[in-house]
Image (cartoon, rainbow, N blue to C red):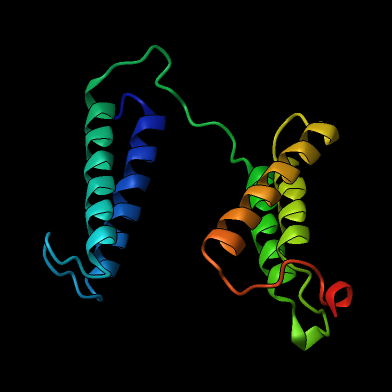
Length: 161
């Protein structure tokens, strides 16, 4: 008998996703501990997540809670905002040539990502969101453009020519 629905279903989700990642990692060369292949890290993380999920499922069957930790309604709003923010980020960063949208660059894409994703929460403070977006944009510019020397547009092509 399930004594905590929240723990049971979250553990089941962890086990399924972890197992899926571990299984997907087997399509890559695993290698050894000394010479890790591209599938080594995802395989270990997938196994770790699956084991954590199994422990959580087991815990949900033995640990009694007062109300059974019922599952609430599905939170569609955060899912739509978070997934939408990531899609918009990708579109703004690389552009959409089929629709004639040029790349808008890293900075604008990060601002859009931060503003849209922050709408997923219950509280939206525009000033704080802009401060966070500025911090993330500066940090991303320094990390990806300056330190890693990645070749990606930083500003819209109509600004830089």
